[in-house]
Image 1 (tube, helix red, strand yellow):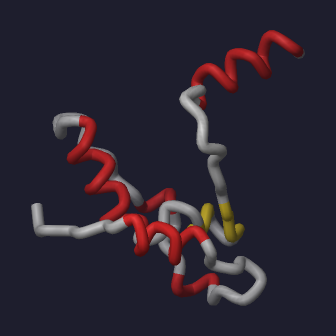
Image 2 (image 1 turned 45 degrees about the vertical axis):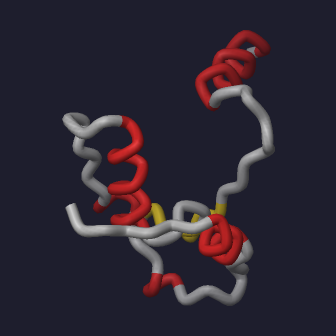
Length: 87
């Protein structure tokens, strides 16, 4: 795997992308991402970021997606479980 350096500053710049002005053709379609489940967790994360380019702003088909995360220890799985319990 090639070297890929993601710094905190890079991530902050990526997080600030405005979906109203970004060119959708410049974004990677998340459907094209291939996750190598044989890699250790940390390497899978780096490989995902290498493939997606911007983990905060990407495409899903023709739809531009922007995501953000709270600074918390609660996992996505725990959030989903709580949501499903409320339904």
